Structures are given as structure tokens and as C-alpha cells.
Image 1: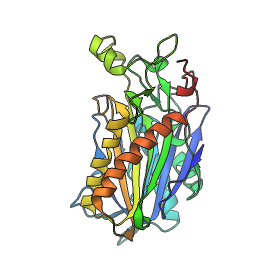
Image 2: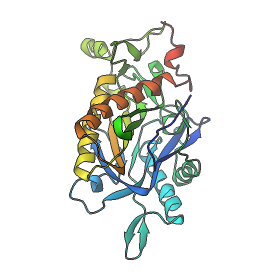
Image 3: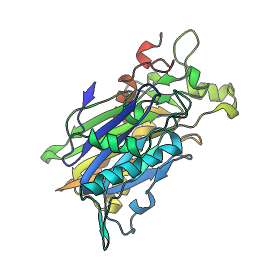
Image 4: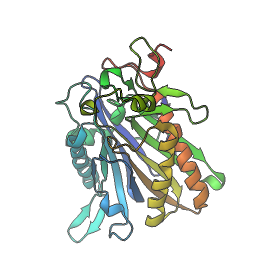
Length: 318
């Protein structure tokens, strides 16, 4: 299915390699966005995150790139920078404009071709595909090689992908999320407590990761790397301190939809982007940011298709 992020000033583009089961997704904010970040996982793969902290010189960024390929995928930011420089977007310096492009990656080398990783040319292609209209969800872009419930190995995991959700508050304020769901733990419906995707019994059905942990029925050396990465965007006017705080609070949406989350084997990273001049109540924004993050996580699982021998949730026998 397709969805619209819905925040003016933002375009989204995917590069998808279904043959090798990897890809990248760019979030362009060419005119600049005040940005923040929260890194709640213990194994993150990131670029240009420190400059997003309060007190750092750079006030606005021009894009965020999310990618597969593990640390190799951070090279996609080079292609995004080239795209932006060619079009005259970036942070003003005495020698010209320098595009600021934070990045985060997921580990998807254990599905598909581990030697195929998105790089600069793929990041550039994602920019060429960017649109402010509908974009595809599921196994596309950075979500192509995503999976969840991997405590028993990738062969017992469930396929997931990329999801988008948004909410319009009064006075035209929008808060939206785009999330790549590559978690170690299970994905849970926060409203019902039902497991939506998790490790699978050989005969069908899901096993609770927490129950496996309680029983010690796993081998630590086989635990894969994982992460949830994404962006929360709003047309409300926020400063750097507020965008960083919003990123932190939005992470509650991960905790509602993923169990366990923020483990030593996860590199969870959420960026926030503030565009526009609308004044909004920060408490309301924060509450809804967590809501849209958890909704995007569910969509990333429910819109996924079976791939690489890993069944999607809809194809798992109950």
C-alpha cells in the first residue's frame, strides 16, 4: 500500500533492490528543518548526529537518509549530499553551501546478498525518486531487508518493512512518522496486546521473545544485529532543544509496539524534523508523536510481504 507523510516541505524517495533485498529511503527537507535525535539502542550505526544536539552550531539540516547495508550503508549520505549540492541546498559557509545529511542504518546483511549494500549512487537515486505525494510502504527502500523476532535466528524471524503514519491536530498542525522496523523483539498491537510478528514455531504461530529469554532457549553468539530507525516530522515550529526532547518522547512509541526494545542488540534511532511557522502545544505534539511512531511500526509489519525465505506476518499460519 501507499501512504503520504503529509508534512509540507518534505519529500520521500526510495531506492529498492528486491533481488539483493536491501535499499535506502531519503527524507528531503531541502529548504531546511530544525532537527533533533534520540539514540536509545546500544548498537547504532549513524552519521552527523552529534551536530543535532542543543548548543551545536548548525541549526538546520537538508535531509535524512535511512539505509540498509549495515555501516556500509552510511555511504548513501554522500549521494544525497551530491544531489543537494547540485541544486544549491545546504548550510551556508564562506566557500559555498554544504548539505547537512544525518544518516542511520539497519543490519540486513543476513538476508539476501550480503555483498550488495546501498552506497552513494543509490542514495542519489532515492533523491531522484523523491515525492511529496504517496510513497509505497512495506518491503521498500530501507525496509526492504527488514525483519523482526530474530532471537532464534533469521530463519525463524518474520518479515517486516517500512511504515508511515500521521495525525492532524487542530489549527492544521501535523505530526507524522516514517519508521523502518528491524527489531530484535516482537511487534505488539498496543491496543490489544496481541503479538503481530515474532519468532515463529516451525509448525506456525508466534513465540514470545520474552518467554524464550526467560527459559534461556537461545544461543547468545547467534543473536543478530537489529534496529528501529525513523523520523518524526511536524509543521509545528520547534527549537533544537524541543526537537531533541520530542525525539526522546517519541521513542515511547517504540516501547509500546516492540517487546523487548532498546536491547544491547538494537541500535534504535529516531530523528525529528520541525518545518513551518505554526505554533503548537508541545505536550500534545509529544503525546501524538509516540502514537504515530507505534502506528507506523504496525504498518511496517502489516504492509510487508514474504521475501528471502522469510514469511510476512500475514503468511504465518496461526
